[in-house]
Length: 132
Image 1 (cartoon, rainbow, N blue to C red):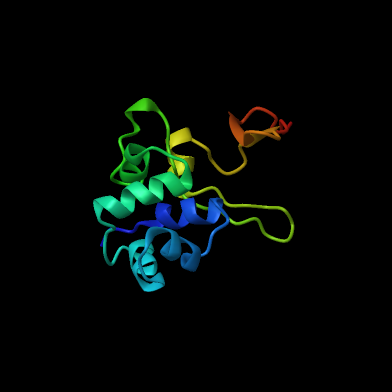
Image 2 (cartoon, helix red, strand yellow; image 1 turned 90 degrees about the vertical axis):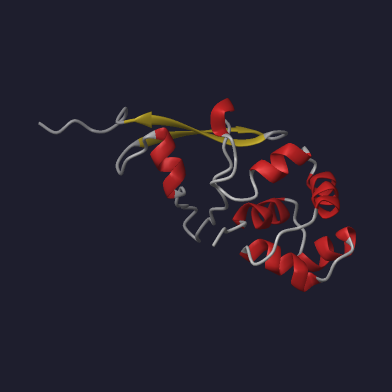
């Protein structure tokens, strides 16, 4: 079954509830929940409204509805949502680690722009302590 987890990611990133989306799109909350679980797909009119709500192109929305449907030939990816635990830690999605070759023990540089957000730059094994 296709999982439309990125629909949920776009909604959460926008700070909206399923009820908010349902009201803005003109569908039931249950319809939004089914889209996010991959039990049904939004029609083209709903996709247009969703792309407007999330401030992304229709192409970006449709290509990123599920992780296997998007064309990553431009090198851009949407990997999904990661939660930060109470220690400030997060787990990168497996596909992200695979695409960028991030292995346990690798270093990741964290960059931030208050207007654009946070970026992670994999450094590989740079910064690992050498063992004598």
